[in-house]
Length: 192
Image (cartoon, rainbow, N blue to C red; front, side, top):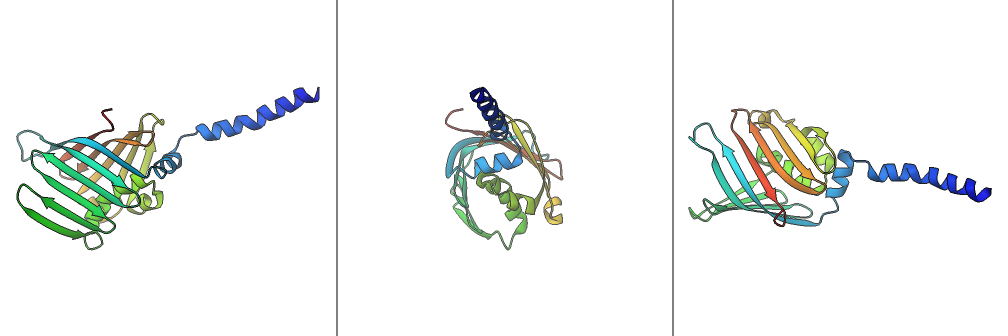
């Protein structure tokens, strides 16, 4: 009889553990992202700009390396590399032969935009909360993170940034500007 009681007690103690392990929320997402040391993927970005008669499509690759290195290499229709390491950003347009350096501390609007992706990939919730009001929804297989800038200067440029993904894979980034222009970046991991 005690073995039956012991089994029942063990089952009751195990059920809450399973529920906690399977729970999915913003904190679980950030904890999962914080476990990824590096990632590399390709992307297709479509920019919808009012001044253009049709959307502009960019193709290239994204790489992230913990703790704070991020690069976006546009390979088509031009060759441009944006590299962010710590508080410094470098933009090299190989097509035009131009190179620019930007301090993210001196350009807080750019720093805030970089933080939306970098802090998400790093699983750095305090950093995201510092720059954005956050709305999180969806299951592990199809989560959505809607970010609204806190800084008035950034809000003057960007209305919202919406990131979507599956588990620890970022799948899409949509940036809606206050002008109505928007860009949608679809990210492909290992051909998926």
